[in-house]
Length: 452
Image (cartoon, rainbow, N blue to C red; front, side):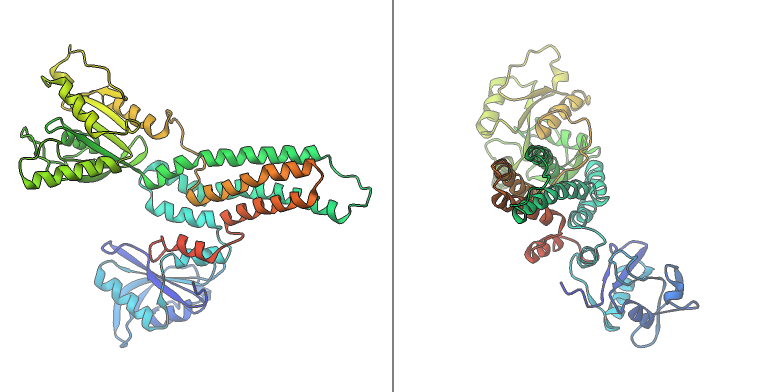
């Protein structure tokens, strides 16, 4: 991205009461002065003050009322000069103000370009920049808090400490190469080998958090499946807390997949209600059932509902076994247990739970099983740090270099030890952006919304 141009973009969603247009770059103040006028001058002497005035359109006419604030660099979000115009919300007024800024000499910002400039100007490292995107897209409190901690530098600090330790060991190795013939008071090799083992353990701990990071950032696809009239849509409505799906006593009411985002035990999920699986009675239902099969294949967790009150229990189980090959992601749910309170239900080859949607009983037990399926163990605390896929790949590269470094240090082969140490240091530096690949940077910042 070009960091020299003066850029501008709408930083708020269209349709709110207020819209913010951000202008950033060396000519941000000049552009702001061209398109805004008030009783107080927009200038360095009034920096960081919200000033009331009007937008001056390109033809010289007076446009919308707007507040303006000038934030000179380096103490701004981007690290450079920034002007923000706070005008009335609504698509027309906002677009008119943005067009005026573009005509005054700014260009339209690319996706993530403001945050990219903050990274380039040292306002944040790459992990913190990624966390800005995570914060915007967070779908649960846990994901939000995780992003906030990463913005505060929790992950950066961990990576920085490990990198510093490795640099110290590398400096010792290079000193021994440079002064091989000198009888100096060198530290014992075992000290450095112990440090490498501790760093390896720290990296392994970070890698274990990768699963949590994937879940919290990407969410989980949960499919509600089963035969018609087993209570799938009713369970969807109960988990959502409002009536999203139509529920009737008529079998086959749901004829297509229905998706809705939710939050279960702090885990962001996409709940997918599906058409009841049976022999289709018409072409439209057949298409819906085909989509049900596809959704089951793509699901990370399947809630298969079984009718505990059915006369042919074996048929219920057989249908489930036929359509769910992967039992590892399957939770069997015996619904309508309120109708058969004393009935003994058979054992199943997968985790199962007894519920009554109509009485809202057994839901906590269901969520316990769901939480265990996602985390593979009960999750009682928020993760302090959770790495993403990019971090994990680089951490794996770093940890793979450590055994070779330790072995060569033990053999007093300082040159080869330095090669392994540099590889580990470089991998950690790529995580925080102290070393960077332009293609990787483009990939990261292209995922941002325009205006951030």
